[in-house]
Length: 306
Ligand code: SIN
View 1 (spheres, protein in one colour):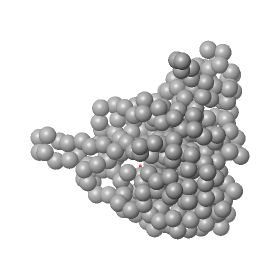
View 2 (cartoon, helix red, strand yellow):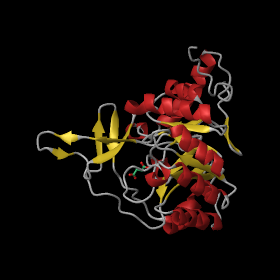
View 3 (cartoon, helix red, strand yellow):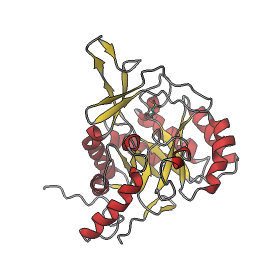
View 4 (cartoon, protein in one colour):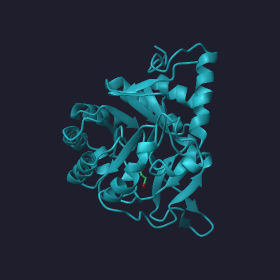
C-alpha cells in the first residue's frame, strides 16, 4: 500500500482527497449517497453571518467539460450552522473544514469568533475570499494583496485551528495574493476557486445564468488550476490544496507534482458523490504501480525543461 497520508499545518490527514466547498453541503447530508468516513476531509459550503437565499435561478448550467454556477452563497447562516450542523460532526471520523464567506472584515471575524466560542471538533477554516457571484465581499479581498494580508492576520489572531485562504484565479498575479496570505499568517492556501464565465441560449438570446456571469469549474479548468498551484508553490513556503477539474487519481497526481499537498474534488461530486472514495482507491494503486511511495515525497516534483 502507498502512503497517502499528508499534512497541512498542524493537522495530519489520512489521505489527500478532500471534497470542495459548495459541492458537499454542510458535510453529513451526503452520507445517504456516499461513505463520507474515508475522505481526507470535507470542506463545507460557505457559511455567512446571516442566512442567504442566494441568487435567483437559473444559477447552474452545464458547459463543455464543465459547469457554471452563480449560487450566490445560499446557506443557513452561522447561528443555525452552529446549532444544527456542528453537533452532527461529533459522530464523524472525517475532519471538517468550515468554509467562511463575509462581506466585511468584521463579518468574517465575527463568524469565526462565534464558531470558536461554540464547542466543536472542526479541524479548521477555509476563508472564501474568491466568490465571483456576490456584489459585496469575497472577491474584493481576494484581488487585493493588502486586504488579503490584513484579513488573514486578523483571523489568525482569533484561532489556532487550521487557517486556509482560498484564492481566486481571476487576478493578475495569484502568487502575489498567496504571498500576502502567507505574510498574514495563513497555514495553507487553496487554489483555485472558479473562473468567471458566461453561457448564452442563442434560441432566445437569454443568458443561461440569471445575472449573466457565473463561476466556471470542472475538467475545463484543470490546466488553469495546475498552473496557478505551481505559480503559488514557487512563491510561498506554506502547503497548498489544489482545486479545479479533478475527476481521477491521475489528476490528483498532477496537482501533487505541481505543488499541492492535498486536493479538493468539486464538480465531479455532482455526477458521483462517491467519486472521492473511488479516487482514493485508484490513487493507492497508481502510486504502488509506479513505485512512487508517498504523497509527501511527490509534492512539487514536476520536472520543467531548462
Ligand atoms: C456561490 O455560492 O456563488 C459559489 C461560491 C464560490 O464560488 O465561492
